[in-house]
Image (cartoon, rainbow, N blue to C red):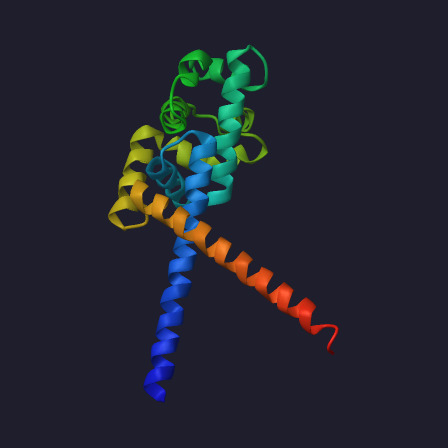
Length: 196
């Protein structure tokens, strides 16, 4: 009996781990698609943010805001126009880059800024209210971003394209199965209610 209980516990733990990886992989895949960034590049940037004192959520919001800021600046509007100009960057050139390439270009320009107050103002203009949380990461320049990304991959923290795709498919299948079970439970419950 103990062996069966242990096997069930191990099986449950493996299932829970697989479900957690699938959910995370699905989130990464969806976010990468929405932001127009490669899943590997996204995770490398998320790791760089975490290593620099920010968190994954802040990086995700910063990437979305950066993309929107660049789009506005390409039309000559928004606070990022002056920020890009101060950094010696062209919004039109940045707009042709992938988000990770854009982040690297901004980091290179940002790493040359010496004034902490100026860094905070520029980060907030480009990345929104929480932009200041990326100052440490941006100050490392593109070389720092690359090194932190390589470290994330060396530690096995980055899911590959195929893994993310399979994780998304597995997570979708789990949601369908949970929905089907919920539907069965509701049907059975409604059939039993008049009896009780």
